[in-house]
Length: 100
Image 1 (tube, rainbow, N blue to C red):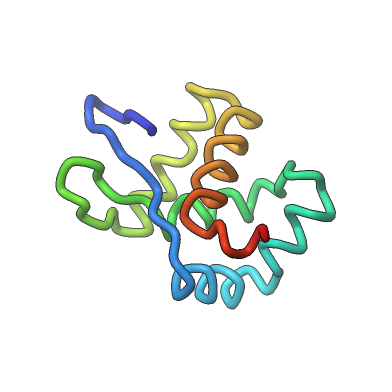
Image 2 (image 1 turned 30 degrees about the vertical axis):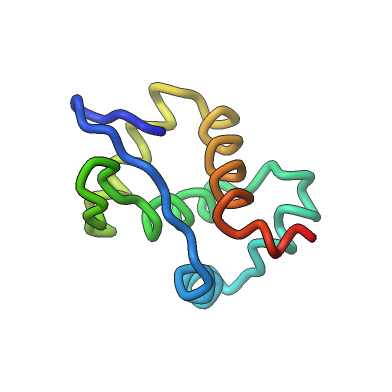
């Protein structure tokens, strides 16, 4: 999904991670998706990314501090809206029940 320094990473969302993200950001992810037609605030995107990033090959969770630093690289290399779309797409795939 994302490649940084030759390593491929992906995002993995689940209900527990969503609860953590919403507690930390004090906002509803679904509320923001609906309110902003999918264009999420930068800080929320960073949280979704940093709490959910795993190395694709090993499925090892990336420490949040490291993932936050990687988010900047990903946005710079891919663009904000491309990164936004990729995060939303993976969120919908993993958390599809929320969109029914």
